[in-house]
Length: 314
Ligand SMILES: Cc1cc2nc3c(=O)[nH]c(=O)nc-3n(C[C@H](O)[C@H](O)[C@H](O)COP(=O)(O)O)c2cc1C
Image (cartoon, rainbow, N blue to C red; front, side):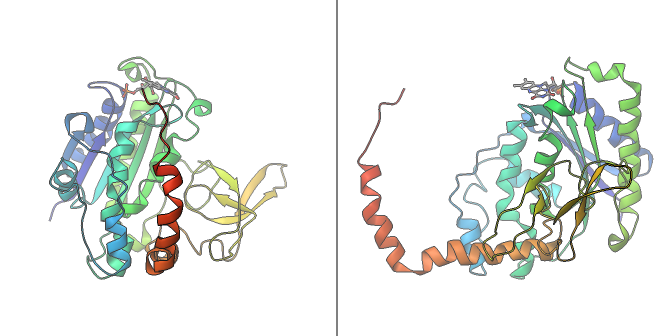
């Protein structure tokens, strides 16, 4: 069977995100892939209602799907997307983050959470790879959560990110065409994606720029001070994206680096096992809430203060 690669963008038509994505996809096509591409602007994607009926179901061992499955285009896209060997996402940066149309699409994937569905035996594991492109008018400074925001949406559908590009200083429509280096880098992403797909899943590794980001595990450039987690686990410093835990150490040449501690990948969100730990957390916190009828009674009484209080709207 041939290799299937899909491109997903949410940028302006014939503009920077689309151009970089198409350049990467051209490289995939040249290497023999069957290529599909969509721009989310062409589809109707409703916001997640927040009902959590999918995770409530999964935490009880049931695969319920999403309440919006037959109401918009999300399922239609996911049926194709989840049948790919690789997906390349190319998304404009708005307010330091991935654009809202992309995030609305991504946040509708909770009912597809592969770790949960695999844990309850509802689906078979499938290895997929992904490449991420963030496209902004500024430098890293004004795209500080752009790639990280996209990375955060990859776990749910088990996409192993093997390459990322931060395309900077391209604010104008199709302005990226003045930057041959970026176009070449996008082409290289396509080649990297094909290399990864052709590598046995257990041997796939990071193929992007070697020194990219703080985190040696997921290459994000975002670290936070750790705080005690639901089960007491507490790392001094955490990777904001994959959850790797460790500390900062000074290298001989006076630079800081993030060193992952021995048990620092216990809840690595890029792995099925790591995310299954989160299912335990949901089972305890959400499941525990629903399981105890006393909780519902307390909430039922206390909610009146807020239900009965209304402020002027607009
Ligand atoms: C609402 C809005 C917010 C934006 N915020 C940022 C930003 O925070 N950082 C940045 O680098 N670029 C920002 N931009 C610029 C876009 O990322 C830039 O124009 C990019 O080229 C859009 O990609 P496209 O050409 O594929 O649509 C913003 C643009 C819009 C419309």
